[in-house]
Length: 358
Image 1 (tube, rainbow, N blue to C red):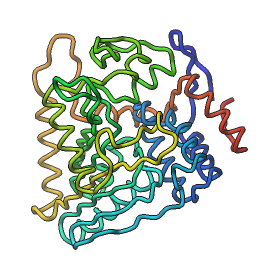
Image 2: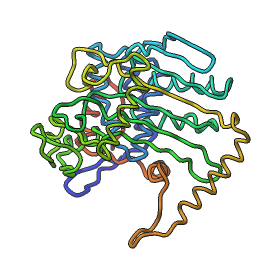
Image 3: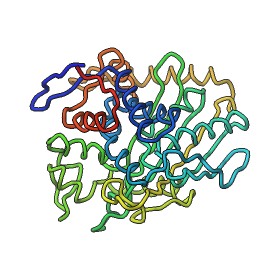
């Protein structure tokens, strides 16, 4: 592992297998069963491989802290509350979101293989990382995948002056044949809060169209942004999509909603009752799966062959940049900012877990 200077910030470059093993060992040492600790490592390292640093190892310190405080139950198993051949409502038992979400999507995929479609609604979950991980689980099985979650209230309603709703991340994934899959993953805010958190950790400014300060003014200071409000993507349209996603994730599952959902960072007394929704649609329910993937290949080729604007070298499909970054990172390693990496060193010492970085 090597340290490199990038501008004012020092980064640490790590081998993805080394950091994956560290994450699994750390969560296992903190009380998570090994098989489930592997799931946490899979989701977190997948985010960092794709350059989505806001949802990777930067989240580990708060996850471990909440485990230490008893706000996360790392040994909880999914409990089915209601079930039909195509659907289920499950209780996540306040376990880590990466664990509950992976198991819930596995259940949705199982139902889709049996009936053509599977849908799972879940309460008592936790922050689950990148939504794309779960939608792509279905795409890897020749299915259309969908996942969404609700979050702590971060945005005001249009015209409102207080936080009312989270940014409700969601993802769709579609399998292709020879082309990369289409993987759309977005939060309903102009930017994921995690990116502002990372900027704050690393002492970086943010664009002035990401958030407002507590007085409702545009700000480039991430600390003020975290005290204020995130701006929705596309104005009222982003707000509307956030409402729809929260209904699917939380109202349907009877999880906490809006201001009733405790903050992962600011409320260290109560567990999070996050809601999730997962759906898998078997392509075979609509005909030949291979033919669909070939048609999608051609669609991708057509889209990428469009006329480019001046100074544009390539047109990208949703998720393509992140998927190509993952391929690159598997070979070149993952870069982690020093301020993000330092707390991991402390946790390695605390839990007597090996973290290779020299």
